[in-house]
Image 1 (cartoon, rainbow, N blue to C red):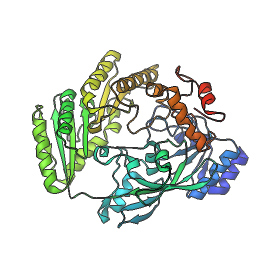
Image 2 (image 1 turned 135 degrees about the vertical axis):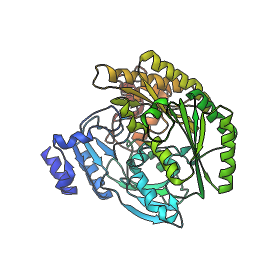
Image 3 (image 1 turned 135 degrees about the horizontal axis):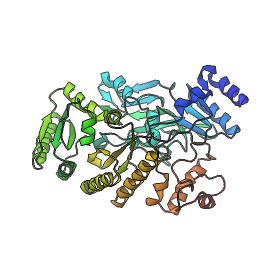
Image 4 (image 1 turned 30 degrees about the vertical axis):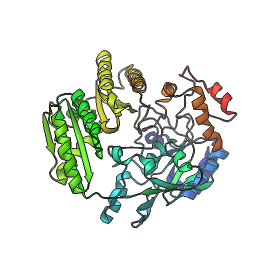
Length: 475
């Protein structure tokens, strides 16, 4: 241990290698319910330092987990097998902004919102906007292929990353993609985005920037219940209108963010945002208001100035933190379903809440069917954590049976491993696991994530998976 620590100190300096129990405590969890303490945490500043750290870990047969801000919600940044955590919190430079070609080159520790703030004087912004954008980092967004409220119109992280410099599991530094919109050969950039740190570590990222739209209009539509609000969403999309965002919050979420300007006592609210040319925005906002009127809203409000718009969005993006007013803990489930199934799936989630006695606060990227049911509980009560995990698994089963998928933006990580067989056969997962062989990871990068380990899954065992993909595979 002392020899390993000394080797790492030689790379980054003594201030940036942590191994005492007290220092490691803050790195044992992310935004999920999982916990595991790493052996060592290292804070590099350059790609070359990351490469050297990876080589040291490999020589000493230690797993490596790359970590951003720790805001992930599926256990992706948890060092389940100990080993070395590489924290990107010092790699925060915006290296270049090209106003003409509309791209920026950044390090992985750059906070999502900080990039948009930095380029705002140029009339540019970075479109992906996870709810945690004031804290989450570009590197973490790449690992999970994060989305956000505005992914309905603009897409998720992979749609805005042009290229990246990465470190492979043997410490090799290479480039995937570049500043051009298209590149030749296999899309290794696309394969790496969303791989949850299991294939490569991004150390420099080239992202696409967009022009700030001419006009932005935000509307709040208040409904008596979630079912009526869901029907209004279907009505808007069915009319051929694609707003930049359609967010939904149920009565628990509204209660949690009391003071944010949402009417108390409402069953659900829709936050609808349009952007683009002024004439088009005005036409579409009138049409959306007309559609919402068909479903008997209690109120429709239009933000009349940037401050009011910011207040409405602050309430939406502060919901998860505000749930602490309702319960000591929450367990967020991230599934995506067809928009046409919103009413039915939300009804089933409500029935599950009533039958189990656990309150479930529903927060949705309603426009693209991405659900975020948050199960409220108290981890200090015996059995509570186990119960909410079972409820979460049932919600994912409901999503998949409705024609949906296990994740819209938060990844599989540790928490959804056992649900992978709901969507994928043994053959599917064995084929995907071959990517680890192709990248020659030898289980160094974030082992034990994404695929079922066999410990709690009856459909695919670790031994069978290894038999399919060969020695050295880790599923």
